[in-house]
Length: 428
Ligand code: CMC
Image (cartoon, rainbow, N blue to C red; front, side, top):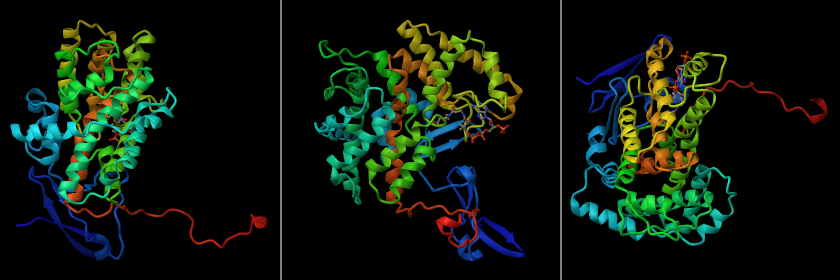
């Protein structure tokens, strides 16, 4: 029998169907609420209790610490798949066959040129500009050079826009870093794999043959996979809501990049390393910073801790912590901030404040330590997150368009002034 929810308002009863997901999650379908109740709405700041869509892409159980892309566990994908396979899986729903993967790779490579005039736009930014702002602007600027990728309705047109952005985004991301480092811009090498090529585009020296490093490549690949999707988070919801106006894929992604930039979201990876560095410079007193994080009169928060959905270990953080230890070991790097991070986590995980609120290390807590070991500058960390999240944003945007979702337009409860008569300036 189908499940129903009954709502009683001032003695009147209203029934709403309950939707059940494939993992038995229940959601009250309130689509008819306003019509049935003569305009009553719901209020849920931060959407803590609101499902914005039905999605078949990513399953997340925050209580049990489970994360799956299209049904496959994050642990298995991080271990056995490569990033391009995961891109295909997220966007099109199935792991690719060898032929499908080869075609996907070839189609992406064919689009890996960026219009030379894009360099003029990059040129206009000061060197000190934050790479996330530059990346968001360049992604938006791409629209002008690829106007055919805006108004895409058919699956075929979407495919064209998708391979274009998968190809050009790493070029732009690498350019934002090269500009800061005063290195000539690089177009990469299409004979390399997707992730190797990204690394080459970021680090190749103009007077030196590029040498790939398997440890570095594998570590990057894994990090990109771990960041590839996370259902309806802030940036993904942004991408879906911008896309719901049919603004186009690149415009939606540009907005998503801006949403990711904030320190409560993807920007936390940069904030974590800055926090760990500050603790180190202050003598490494972790207890002092745990106390600050608990003090309600102190705005300090333990960056890289806590999550809206995970009330248990973030499975990504578990994998990244292990990977950080391995990568640093393999590369022969000792980084004192890894010890500070481990010390902080150890204390916090036993502390009543964190235990009660179910605050655990999240994906951003250890990732920066690996990025640093790979020679990636701190201000590029969130760009690395964006590179990983790109297929997730694309998959969610594509799903939203294929399901023909309506334009995103929440309601509000107005709490401002009632009608007032206009006052002439002399009377105010
Ligand atoms: N340090 C200290 N206290 C915290 C922290 C923290 N990092 N996170 C949450 N709390 C406390 C918070 O003060 C509140 O306490 P109380 O109930 O006494 O008022 C309680 O825990 C619940 O927190 P909240 O802010 O209501 O939870 P939220 O779901 O709105 O926010 C969050 C989630 C991730 C924004 C938050 O935990 C946070 O600011 N963490 C630090 C920033 C961070 O690491 N962000 C990355 C998130 S994961 C990757 C991503 O999304 O990109």
